[in-house]
Amino acid sequence: MSKEKIIEVKGLKVSFGEKEVLKNVSFSIEEGDVTVILGESGSGKSTIMKHMLGLYPVAPNTISIFGQDIVTFDEEQELKFYLKLGVFYQNGALLNSLTVGDNVALPLEQHTNLPADAIEDLVRTKLNLVNLEDAYYLYPSQLSGGMLKRAALARAIIMDPPLLFCDEPGAGLDPVSLANLDELILKLRNQLGMTVLMVTHEVTSILRIADKVLFVDNGVIAFEGTLTEARQSEIESLKDFFTVGTGGKKVTHSLASTRTDK
Image (tube, rainbow, N blue to C red):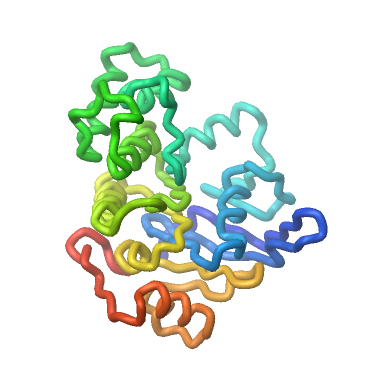
């Protein structure tokens, strides 16, 4: 049975000045999948995500999310749309002057009329989900790299978004912390029923977490398919990506008990 398409991108073209970054990008993302956009540095993978988030203008009928063309929203529709999205930034993007609890609470304080005690309960619940139940009163400067990422993830999911964008979430983490973060994202996907779109160059992460792979090369989607299909692809640049990223070693899915294979 086919699943609902959460995102559809058709003919996305992007140029910055005279440089053509994306030539004619088209793909779809289905409900419940963890889809990874990968490619070499400067390939345009983050540019694709930024256009989906509305950070850059797009032409009509180019990007549809939840069945709606994102350029057709009025101000009220746009706000409701963005409240359905969680964004997990590469650097965490936490405010250093606020505690972890206050950082995670911000979206609830800005976009709901919940009383303070209800907000605190929700924040503590999300911090518990990411194994940070004791960090409520800590400041970002007091957190390790892995803890900082988990705090940012808690804030990204505080509004229970059906769609989570992750921009290089594992950047700067040691291998153990990266594996733990991957496992956490998969657990939350399964528990909360989210669809996840991730931009990353971490091959070990891709092998652990991806249901679907989009490979960006020279401004186009050179490959779209399952992780298994990606690893069996004869596209030379894609083969090189996996070979170099794993040091030529065979890597298996260490999170088989957590991920849902597609």
